[in-house]
Image 1 (cartoon, rainbow, N blue to C red):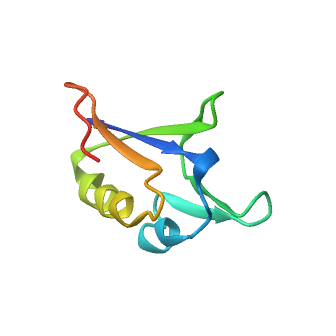
Image 2: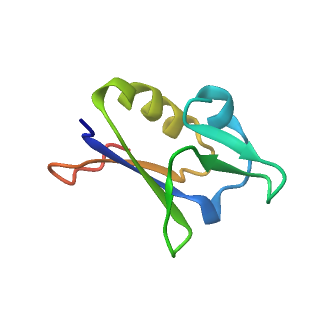
Length: 86
């Protein structure tokens, strides 16, 4: 059961690639399009953000990935309370 919402601000991604290196399960670089990261399984939004729901099992991996992003474009929100984890 998904307990967390991951929001990714793709517009402001600089293409550093640390997310894809740290978590290839969720991230891949899109060198053919624009050199930015893609959130695997993410739903694109009209404002350029992408979202995906994750469970407790994937929280630590996604948190570690968000923490190493040099431009802080990965955010994790607890679905039941709206609390921002990172």
